Image (tube, rainbow, N blue to C red; front, side, top):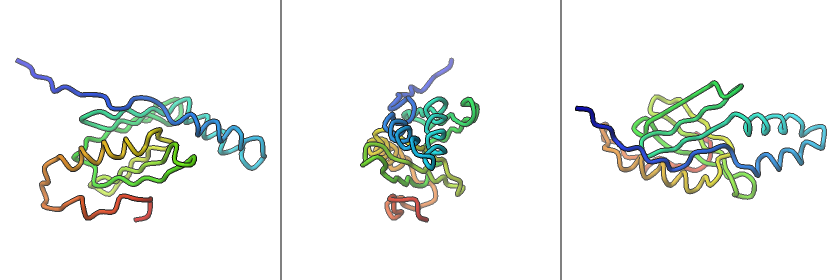
Length: 140
């Protein structure tokens, strides 16, 4: 007898389209070309999948780098708005101190709230509370 736990998808897709548009417009200047190339690469190969059980990110050259974390591994979420708040960059700080970056996340405030709810609903095994950890900005 096998039992499977249902995994509901909250968000599945690529980075914000506004990031690409903004960086292409910035690319008309010589200084903005590296940012434009970065935005094009993100648009082509970066994909996020946020479910009720885990956060998965595939990216890198040709989308071959894949990272996946379950909510019990996440210690805190840090966000910085971009594009006048239309999208944002997120960093998931894991319990072992490593970080997972989610660049140009569309609807990042809703995603942050969803992840925070999953983090708070997990049972705390070490007796520490995530409420005392600030969750704004990238600063440590």
